[in-house]
Length: 108
Image 1 (cartoon, rainbow, N blue to C red):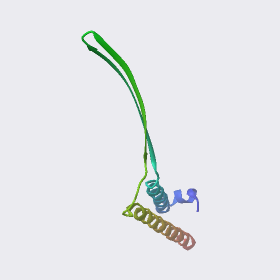
Image 2 (image 1 turned 45 degrees about the horizontal axis):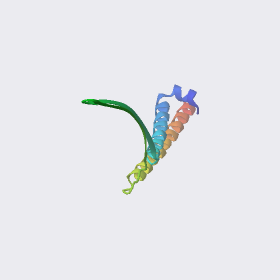
Image 3 (image 1 turned 60 degrees about the vertical axis):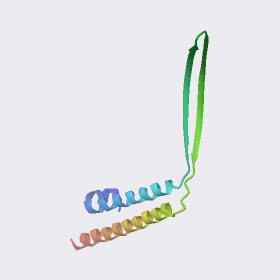
């Protein structure tokens, strides 16, 4: 059953969206294990006077920050597994609803 049929069956469409949300949840949990790279840049100008002396300068800087997640507690792995279980449950509900729609159609 494609999206056209699901659009005619609101309960089926609702469960289909639950499946898609569960899949995105898995992707989100997996992405928390990925390293992240941050970049920052700054530019500054200084002009100082001390009596008869004057100094000025330009300060430019660029910084890179690499963060590696270390999940020593296993929290991220557990959350990913939980999301996978929720995805499987959503798929099961979708299949049950599809079968119910088919039974209802045949009975009608």
